Image 1 (cartoon, helix red, strand yellow):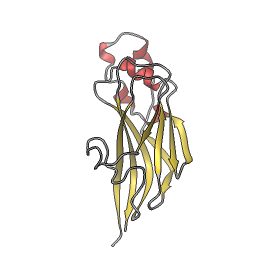
Image 2: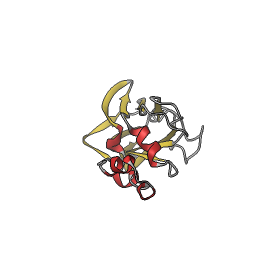
Image 3: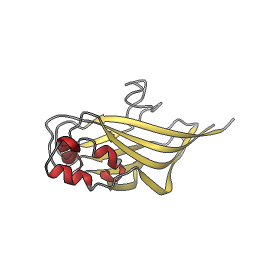
Image 4: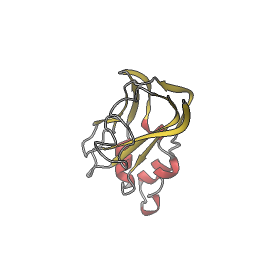
Length: 167
């Protein structure tokens, strides 16, 4: 019996401390890591019995990421969504990050980063036309982090929200 669920796939990757690194999301499975890291049943693809329609894309950083590091990570940061190695979306990463989340550390700062983060409009990024991932198709999200190196790595989580159809 087929069912359709309101569903979110999520995956976390460490940014590392290197500028301009490319991070690959949804390339690991829950069984190879844990449920806190990802909820992908199979690394890099949907199950043969599932199709997914993405309507929103969210991006989050671990809670102890300080705002100055966050600004370095986001500067010129981009996101690409690929299905079967074909790009279906490319946008500035900042469009996926909720604005209130980015402003969480402002009270402790009195510098340019405070002004920069206060002007961010951010996400989640809502798609006017949902992205459809066919049954069993491979997919991934590539994030190229900013040009400024950070002193410490930060975990970044990308969430894909939409409708999951299961056979």
